[in-house]
Amino acid sequence: MDCQQITEMLDAYALGASGSADAAAIEEHVADCVRCWEELTRAQRTAALLALSVPVREAPQRLEARILEAAARDLRARPPRSEKRRFPIGWPASAAALGIAAAAALAFASLLQVQMNDLRNDKDELARQLQTTRDTMSDQARVISIAAAGDKQAVVMDAVAAPEDAWGEYFWSPSAGGGFIVCHDLPVPPQGQVYQAWFEQNGRLVSAGTFVPSEDGSCAYPMQPLEEVGRPDGVGVSMEEAGGSDAPTGDWLLWAAFAED
Ligand SMILES: [Zn+2]
View (cartoon, helix red, strand yellow):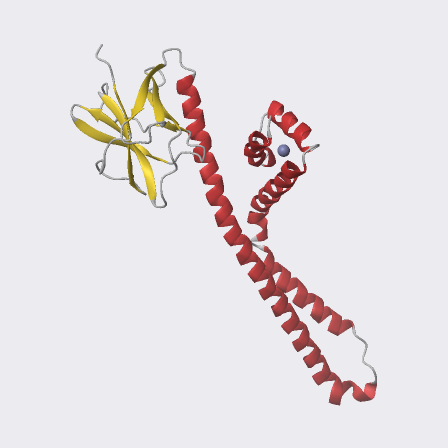
């Protein structure tokens, strides 16, 4: 396996979610590859932060109380320097010491708070990344189940308004109950735009979701299934604003009509 394949599997590996064959391949690869080793370290740090995120949330209060207790205990245990100084100076000195200890504890607690907030922000980002990973993995699982179906069929999607060398295929399986688009050499859309997939059914265009190809122009996008039961007449891809449109706003970039049977 090459570095890219290994890198793609590292997050799952760090979360303890890879199979034993993948895990063995990763371990063998990172033993000899500094770049992937560093990537693995990063993935493991991410996984550790996720694992830490729950217990850490309760730490500051307890810690602050512990520090204050320790400071008070310290003061009580400190022997008075002399009987003479005990009252006129001793008490205010203790008060000052307690004040300093409390201020230090508060400063420490607020420093922790800042770190907690950083961690929480990281965690939100991590949670988002994890969700994206989950979505990607469930997309992949869906694509695989359709691709592996015995009754899989395919149709070529020709470039209409897309660059000439771009093309697609639509695979579907009645038994798996869905289909997916594979695209080739489809340019990454400009910032703020996405590709949107459509079914044509009984003269109506129904959105099947939006996607963005990888940098190499490839994609494997599982179409959102039609609500209406029945065979679509065609499948197309248009370019739309991020978030998708209710109807295609431009020409078909890729299009395939299903043969009558
Ligand atoms: Zn590598």
